[in-house]
Length: 123
View 1 (cartoon, rainbow, N blue to C red):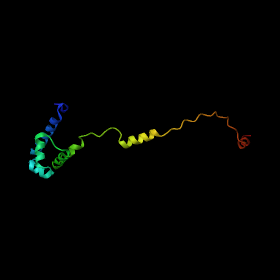
View 2 (tube, rainbow, N blue to C red):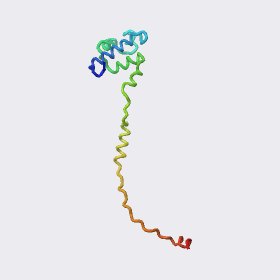
View 3 (cartoon, rainbow, N blue to C red):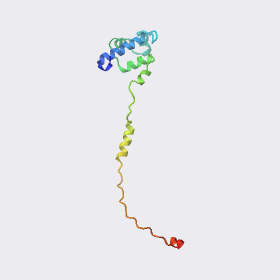
View 4 (cartoon, one colour):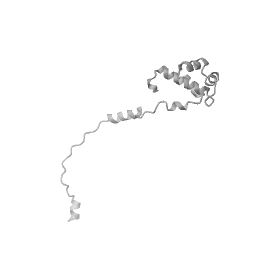
């Protein structure tokens, strides 16, 4: 099922269920709730609530993921923007704001005069 069709609560509950499955799995963390609460510094009550309802604060979620050595998964959670950064945009605005001089009108060119020293050399 496409996750976009789920409600926010359903998505949070799926995350909590996957979290709990990883926590209890022998090939995962293989940890009790009490052990994880102690390791993470998150209270047992918020941990139980999270696993049951999906409700948790971001700080508690980060602490739990850190205790399970799963923080690396957060790196790819939000992609890096492909747009220029704020400093690049500011620099572009500054460059655009600079006034440009109007091009000078072309003056008709006079025929080059021969200097007296060149006249002696050629003659």
